Length: 455
Image (cartoon, rainbow, N blue to C red; front, side):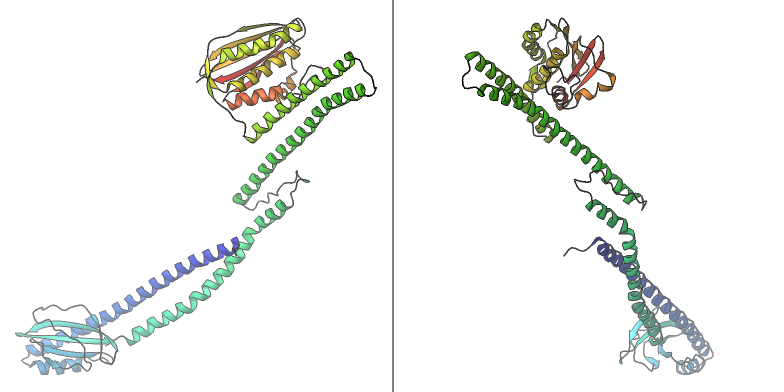
């Protein structure tokens, strides 16, 4: 079972706090022990110096080492400490009450630092051995202090830490849980609001409650995603509605033509030919519409295959112009072109579709007796193909809207398409790293420009 974020945060917070408290307590215990040992060593050092001075003075007064040791024992007295004196060869002159491992340094006059020794009964002692010489006699003074009191003090501190650490950890965990609950409450609110957003409420948004820059950024970013999804959903619904409307028209015409033709039992050949001609025309229109819709749908899904190759752009444009000449001549439109031999790396079929759509749009909206001019202009790293017509122009408010899907500024024009040609042309250009734009437009005509990068 997966733990909640609040639980995981509390566990991690408590674990890190426990580690910090344990390290801190261990450091305090170690430093406290060192301080107690240092204090004991200072006391031992002071007593050992006093003992050595007493023995040295007695030896200077012609006393024997045994007599000096007795005098030293009478002067240097401590209820807990034990003393011992050894001659130059290491033999004990005054036995220590406790059997400790004392190694006198006969050849070293200086004293040595204290060490911890264990007695026969397991009791631990702090032992300091100091060697000296007086009146030609070498001797060693050993003094030891029990570590019982020091150990007891240190153990009390250890018990305090053992009791305090769980208590502090419990309080910290409870506080961390409460703070985590309070801090994550805005996330719960965001989750509740997000679950309430459905396809029936696409306009609903998360509340940016001012819970902090991090959570506010999450809510703002999620709202932006919702905006994009809402826009895509609206575009899809509009696309479906427009597509349904455009598909219904040719289907209705074909059905009407068939019903009228079949309404009478006998028809002559001319009537059947007229009906079949209408059906053929509308089926061709329907096929083009379905093909354009399929191209845009696959383009939106990123699944339209692009096969780039070395293409003579002037040959592609010239072929598209040649295909449109007959249709333009039927309306008395003059088509001229000024092309240059330029090669690009692109999908030839897609380029033919793009220039065919741009030229078809120019032929549709250019009045009879007008003119269409196709010009190819090299640019740094690209080539621009301008298609200028002498049509009525496009209002300023619609110059970007004409590239949207199913947008026709003159729906009454019978020879117009479904309003997908310019959308497909722009997508083809963008798929090749270029763009299509309406360069100029006015009463004297419009100029569309398709820019394609040059390999």
